[in-house]
Image 1: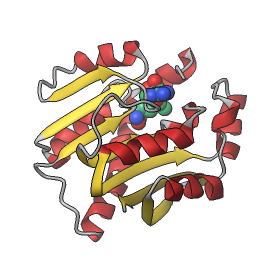
Image 2 (image 1 turned 135 degrees about the vertical axis):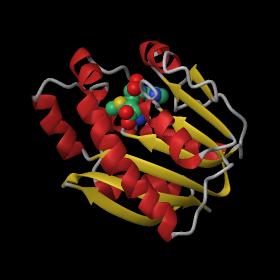
Image 3 (image 1 turned 90 degrees about the vertical axis):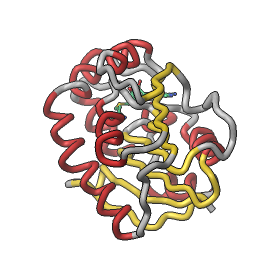
Image 4 (image 1 turned 30 degrees about the vertical axis):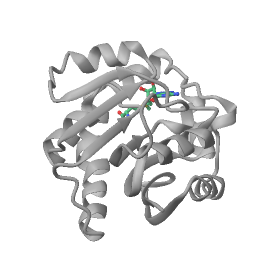
Amino acid sequence: MKLNKIEFLVMNSPIRRFFQKNIDFKIFKKYLKKYNIDLTGKVILDAGCGSGYSSKIILEEFKPSKLYAFDFMPEQIKLAKKLNLREVNFFVGDITKIPLPPSTFDGVFVIGVLHHVPEWKRSLYEVSRVLKKGGVLLIEELSGSFVNFFNRLGFTHPKEARFEWSDFVNGMEKAGFKILEERKIFFEGIKSFICIKL
Ligand SMILES: C[S@@+](CC[C@H](N)C(=O)[O-])C[C@H]1O[C@@H](n2cnc3c(N)ncnc32)[C@H](O)[C@@H]1O
């Protein structure tokens, strides 16, 4: 589902970028170090990449051999392409139907995407499908209660995508992931996870 105007502005603001670089990715890097997973030279996907800032960080921090990044909103991909990251293959795409072959990636990042997607469970199966066996999923999400709070501030999200953590964890496990670790980010309503595809 597309972001409304308020969220589009917030998500593409310097404040969000500051937090993404200094909090979200610091946690992802700690996870990878702790579990001895090296993404250097690997094939990586940034699913729901927004305007491409996360892809830029992935490129700088992990130096993948190939980086694919897609988003549902053509407006976001237009902005991402303006970053002039020639190494990144940016395209418009839908996480419920990823237009790529199975077992393509060593690592997939899904950052704040699934609470926008009514078919979030199906999306987890899609992410699992395109990951190689033993590949790593780094995912950050918002719980349904936290999304309700944001909706009071003028954001809009589909009702079907308001999951609580037990349901989300269940969805990941059913899609074939083993959760190695999860951490809350400031609030119980925002969590990031590192998972391995079994
Ligand atoms: C909150 S933003 C996060 C963007 C980026 N991952 C980040 O962390 O800055 C959520 C993004 O998910 C995208 N999105 C929503 N539904 C999607 C879908 N079905 N497939 C792919 N992307 C989707 C939105 O267009 C939006 O750019």
